[in-house]
Image (cartoon, rainbow, N blue to C red; front, side, top):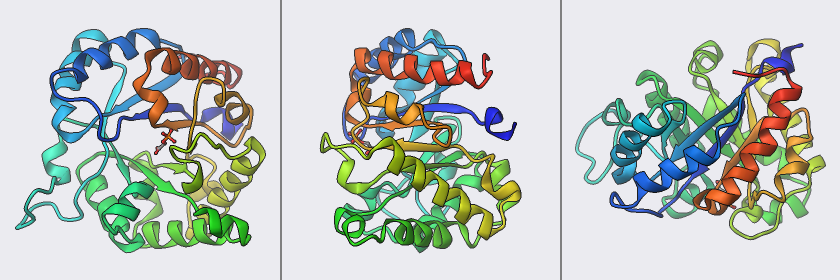
Amino acid sequence: MIRAMRDVIVAANWKMHTTPVDAGELARVVAGRTRVPGVTRVICPPFVCLAAVGAALAEADREVGVGAQNVHHEMQGAYTGEVSAAMLVGLASWVIIGHSERRRDAGETDDLIGRKLGRAIEAGLRPILCVGEQLEERELGQAGTVVRRQLDSALGAHDPASLVAAGLVVAYEPVWAIGTGRTASGADAAAMAGIVRETLGEIGFPDRGEMIPVLYGGSVTSSAIDEFMAEPSIDGALVGGASLKPDEMAGIVARAGVTAAARGRTG
Ligand code: PGA
């Protein structure tokens, strides 16, 4: 069964929290509290904490992946203050692309996000592409249309085979659920995961996108995770606020482990 082959992933988005002084210790504690068979764990600290987190995890738990939260759309050049995919090699093996806070605060467009995706792939970084609708769009019944457009424009310029080879992950994060304490329902998130895969299929992904992990993100906590992990089309979570709390991460990864075990993933 194809579904059983998909990774179960819990990715921590630390956003603009932690410093190089304290990030390593937090990573060490989270790693120690989340050793659960079959769950791929990723920690995405701020750029300046990547080295500290990498060093801590090299000692504490090499199985936890390190990810960046953003990457520039060019490999090098006169872009003051920016960080390219080439610079991340050796510091990160994953990268979050198109987070709604960057769409909102840095004016990132679908086209730009598509170019970032290209640089990530070229550098061998595993991309987590974020998509999701605003509250108003959901209320107008446009959630599916918005997510389709985001996927079409970000992925359209790339060869599906290279995205599959890069290990593309899609995170469905309804914007109104991020940092608000309000989550989507499991059923709504599953329906959106269905739309994500349908769109991937239309773009030309083999097997209608069935091999691409789809995560849910938006106010995920240890008590809210169950509803999402119970959905066969959802393969894990992108966790913001709760990812800074080791107790919360322990609960979230433990619940993800139940799904991983049910799917026969043990490694
Ligand atoms: P949140 O953030 O869990 O704090 O809602 C999720 C995200 O932005 O990825």
